[in-house]
Amino acid sequence: MTTTDPTTRTIVAVSERLVLTQPQEGDVEVMFAIHGDPETNRYNPNGPQRDIAEAREMLDGFVADWVRDGVGYCAVATREDPGVVIGFAGLFLHTLDGERVFNLYYRFRPSAWGKGYAAEAARAAMAEGLPRHPGIPVIALIHADNLPSRRLAERLGLVADPDGRTDEEDRVIHRMAPALAPA
Image 1 (cartoon, one colour):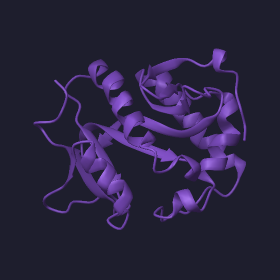
Image 2 (tube, one colour):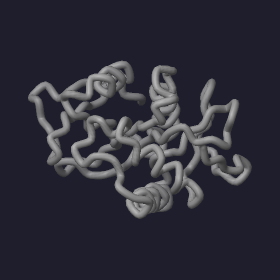
Image 3 (cartoon, helix red, strand yellow):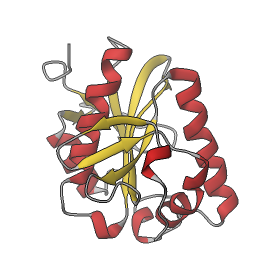
C-alpha cells in the first residue's frame, strides 16, 4: 500500500474519522490501485483503468480542477492513518445539459467498503465545497444497476430523476432534493 507524507498534503476537510486532501502528484499509484481494480469498476462500462498512464491523466484532471475552480475530488485517508489514501471523493464543477452542476463522486478501496466512509467523505466534501459556489445543485451520475451507489446517493439526499433522464453514458441522473440542499 502506497503511503504519502501527510504533512505535505493540503487539507480540504476533516470529519469525525476522515481527512480529505487535495490530490497531488504522488497519488498516481494509489489512483491506479483504486481505479484499476476490477472490483471498484464493477458498474463502470469503461472498465478499470488499463495502465498507469490512464491514472496519470485522471489525476492531472483532478489537480487541474482544484486550480481552476477551487474545488474538486479529494484524496481520502483516515485520521488514524493520514498517509494512506483509501479512496477519492468530492465535487466536480461542470456543465450537464447546459446547467452548471456539482457532480458528487466517491470511489474507495474494497477494504474500505461497508464502513460508512463514502457517505462521511461526501458529506464533508459538500459541507466544504457548496458554500464556495452557492446555488450550484449537486448531482450524481449512477448506472441503474449500481444499487450500492444509488442507496448511498439516496442517504445523502439525492433522488433519481423522476423522468428517468440519463447522461450520454446511460447513467441515471440523481439530484439533491431541493428541501435537503444546503442553503
